[in-house]
Length: 138
Image 1 (cartoon, rainbow, N blue to C red):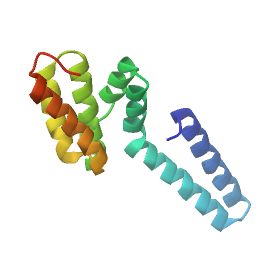
Image 2 (tube, rainbow, N blue to C red):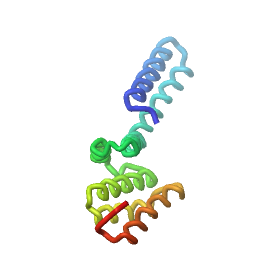
Image 3 (cartoon, one colour):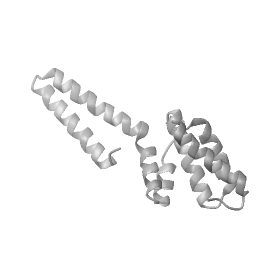
């Protein structure tokens, strides 16, 4: 996934090129460029922020992860992305010591996360919670 600045630069370039081609009478090229810009823009709003939050969490930047999650409206996410949303919320709760909230978010994530390998990660965290009790989390 490209950083947001690069995505927006590509969107702007594709839209500008498409508009210019349309003014030059190159209808097919213009329309295809504008469609490409639209697809990039749609992809940003559908998937962009959740993947940026996953990347921030992977890099250990919990503040950025929390800020990105706060900007997401989960009802607009696809089911799979909503699973990652709940997974990240659960991990943030666990890292902050809020075990019950973390468990609840991970249980939601378990139902939604795809593919199977990622679901196993969620199940492993839930198993750790069950085995260790609610006072510690690995």
